[in-house]
Image (cartoon, rainbow, N blue to C red; front, side):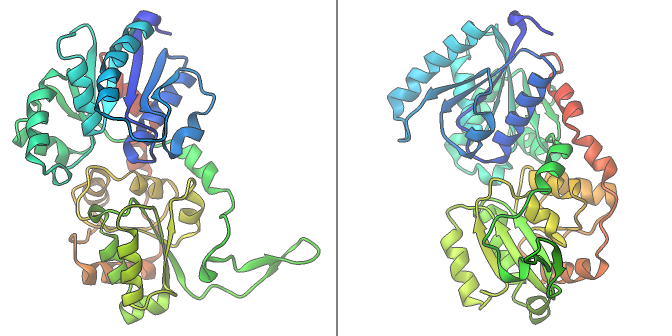
Amino acid sequence: MNGPEHCIGFALPSLAHGGAQKVFVELFCYLQSQQRNVQLVCLDRQGELLERLDGVPGVEYFHHHRHRPGVWVRLGQLLRLRRWVRDKGVRTLYSTLTGMNLFVVLCFWFDRRVRIVLREANALENLNHPLKLLAMRLLYRRADRIICTSEYVRQQLLARGIGTARCLEFIPNPVDVERIIDLASRSIPAPLPPVWQDSKHTGKDGKQVAGKPLTRKRIVSVGRLVPAKGMDILITAMSSAMIRQQVSLVIIGDGPERERLQQLVRELELQDTVYLLGYQANPYPYMKAADLFVMASRWEGYVNTLVEAMALSLPIVATDCRSGPGDLLKSGLGMQLVPPGDADQLGRAIEAALEERAAPDYKALLEMHCLGAVAQRYLAEA
């Protein structure tokens, strides 16, 4: 076990339920279980993942109020982060999410005693503001390493002069397969869409009795409801007559696009086919019960849920948005991916996958995402 002088720190803006936050929480908990000296700091005590770290030692929050902190609070947090690093003996500090990355490098621009490792998962399609790109080009120079979650993101950063080939490296996101399988074994909370209810029910004597067999296939998609995720394309793909009769789609996730997507469902008269369930703390029972997982993203840096679907041995239909897992499906398994934004081709791919049914062997791809192996790559030179 490393001593206090070799403490490893993880920095997050909050514990909002996103892929970046999940990755750092998984790494932090794993390293704690391995008796490593790790600390985690969040600027704001907010987010759906708070419960996951409730009572866990080594976690600190700078801002405990629900309202959004102002500029002066953020400036104060710069000084507080420096004190936190000094008091905890942090020698290597990991940061993720572009805004947080810029915050951290500003904080330690002149302090070379602290190694700064940035994780960048955003494809630059998500970062099209010229001032933010300029800030990344200037400030990311301070980073000792920049971890990219796909080769696509790495090449984008290189092309824009953000970082150098020496410090940019591709490391896939970690996935705790055992934990996902355990969470997937739990019951799906009510209420459920009728076509997603189990074909068995409990009789008066408490025994399971046969019910009406399911007549539709179950499709699930998980992701934040934003344009990048292409949920509107997926909903449109559901409108073909054949798919409408064959399937029921559950979309798990929330975001600013929810109202527009619900309107699209009404316009296409898909109220009995498409169900938006909102955010679910545990989406895995829905995924386990599905016949097919669909990712319809227009662009991505990484897609955790795609790897989680592999962990549950689900057949997958995905768009060719150059995300890390998508590229692996294409190059490692020879899967045909769907062009982003094409609802007709997405619909045909869904029909073909439902007829084929069997999932490919994901073993090699899952080994790449093994939590322990990925953690060791993160800790290189830490």
